[in-house]
Image 1 (cartoon, rainbow, N blue to C red):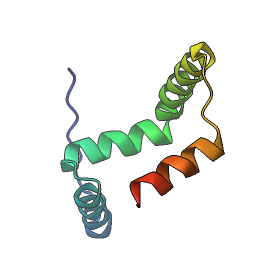
Image 2: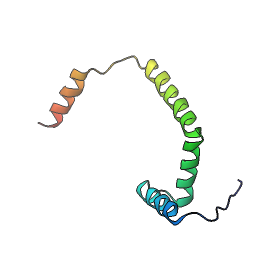
Image 3: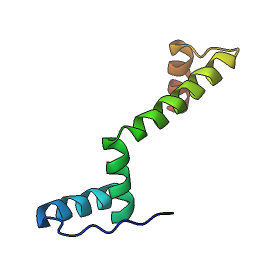
Image 4: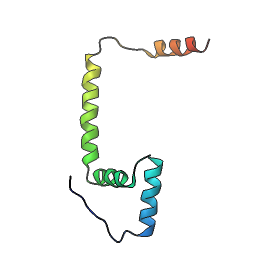
Length: 79
């Protein structure tokens, strides 16, 4: 896998990346990769593909869960 070294990163940018990495429970390197993928639109392609797989799976499910059933199950758990 190729490697890139970034030099001359402004302190504020470095601090913000570190904060985001901590919030998202990622390493600084992984946070930078996620930011780059998002900026370049690579994350959206992955999400779109994943959502289409989910939609296709949902079409194969025969039974439907109604709001009424969900509410009944929630109420049952609270008794």
